[in-house]
Length: 256
Length: 339
Ligand SMILES: Nc1ncnc2c1ncn2[C@@H]1O[C@H](COP(=O)(O)OP(=O)(O)OP(=O)(O)O)[C@@H](O)[C@H]1O
Ligand SMILES: [Mg+2]
Image (cartoon, rainbow over all chains, first blue to last red; front, top):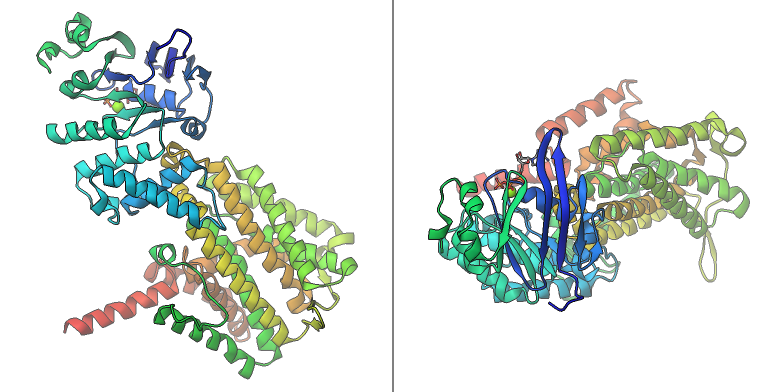
């Protein structure tokens, strides 16, 4: 990173409470250009809440969020998406009755600005379908294009979720437990798809599978009870006592 | 919804294209035939009645865009339709009643009302949309009811110049049953094709997405207010076009045309005909107005009959009469096939 280039994403002093429940307190993290940052922490640590704040589904009580140097703390979710900040959800959000292709095309049309077209949008529809098919081909799911998403295996559905987000050609991609419920091999395949199809992508990856996080991420942030207790290279995190404690005896050192 | 999503939605006046699949050609021919039959057998009164069914059916069609595809149940839809009817009736008194001018006035009024409605209700959801649209509708009704000099107040407006169509070489008066029926038919067909192209286009897919999963659509970068506003404008334009012709069928427009009960009637028609099917709007309009016109000559309790039909439809054929009948016959055929 050159000295004056802004980080892909900067989270500064973010705090959030629900009623009396303090879910995030003073969380600051930056994501470098092209970096993959792991985000780990026990259930209820506030990982998803942090994603919700970064993507605009929640407004923080304090702190700010900047995308490539630009303040987006109060921008609407769709505005952030069009600025290149895209997320996936912990639970699949694909439209189950729509075909795989249409799910991807819906995203591609949004990205190309043709999502609101009425008359004369035939070309845009075809272009979005082609973009969808190309992604599906590269992910070796082309023969699934016509199936409704509900007709896919769970593992395939998770990959479709990721492909939908890639169809929006993000600059920053936030993945919320994309590998949860997948076998080791499936999880690795999914990460491989993200790495090969998402060029010039900066990523934050939430996962409970520490092998995957330590294996693919440049740095790892550890969240516990809403506080960022560490953010460092995988090796440093494995040796970090606070991080060890947060995982209640799960030995981070043995992972990976 | 798949029946709408997969077609190309193009129907031509002459179903002569060789490339078109037979069922489509047959459908169009049947439709043309069905449309032509009344011209041979129906009298002036019946043709005017059919025109009314088609015009109100077109307004219901526009409501289907909001309800069936956007999940937006509006109790203010009569404002788009009735507002346009008043605007056309008032404009006709000074501008004359050229059908193209009337349609332009109606469409502009429908879209303006939709814009107003959109600004007021845009950020709300489901139940609030219903209630806010009702309030907007009531405000408009109050204005119409009390602004006697312009709207005729409770009496409404009567006696307009003859609706005319200027072709290049001749001016055709649209003041008899045949002409009004044909005009309403063209309106209904054009509105159906426009609505169909809307729901198959990206905007229609996006609208359907907002009905199913708003959060998802935001995460896909879609602005939900923008999608809904576009749907409201399209709906308002179609309802407005229908409203523009309405006063000329019976030479009358009254405050009932903007009353919330008119909106409620449209919702009932839509449910009877089939929400989300588009064509169901016309079926529902025909059933409702048919009961209203023919049963009311036997009993004052015709609304009871409508209520009964409504309840039966919801219970037995929740997807509307046509879909219900299709399913029933399909099942019987299946059963025969198996035995
Ligand atoms: N909208 C909300 N209203 C109230 N409490 C909430 C809300 N969203 C999250 N919480 C609470 O905030 C805490 C953090 O939740 P969050 O979903 O961010 O955790 P997480 O780290 O993603 O956990 P997991 O690993 O289980 O997904 C939890 O105690 C949760 O119950
Ligand atoms: Mg979570």
